[in-house]
Amino acid sequence: MNALICAIVVYNTKIEDSETIKIILQLKERYSLQLKVADNSTSPEIIAHNNQCAKSLGIYYYSMNGNKGLSQAYNIILNDIFKEAPDLDDILIWFDDDTMINENYFEVLQRELFKS
Image (tube, rainbow, N blue to C red; front, side, top):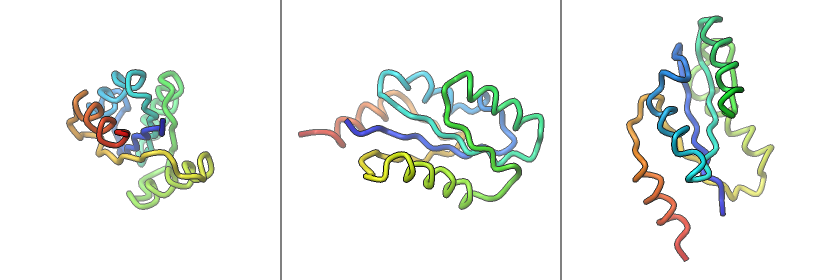
C-alpha cells in the first residue's frame, strides 16, 4: 500500500500544541501515516524543543532555522520525499498546523484512494 505522508509547517508553535499533529499522532499507526514537520519558528527555544519532541515521537523534522516562508518549507519536505521515494507512489497531504481533522478523514481517504 502507498504511504500517506502528512506534511505540516509550524511557526513559533510547539509540536505538541498543534491540534492537527496531536490527531495525526493518535491515528499514525492505524492508518500507516508518516508525519513530516517543517519548522519556520524564529525562537531558538521552540526550535530546540521541537527537535527533541520530534525525535521522541518519531516525526520527520526539518528546522528552517527561522521563518523562510511556506514555499521553502514545502520544498524542503518535497525534496526529502523525492530523495526517499523517487518512484512517487506515496500520497502527500498538506495540512495547516491548526487544521481540524478526525479519524473519518483518513478512513474515507484510504477507502477512496485504494479501492480496487
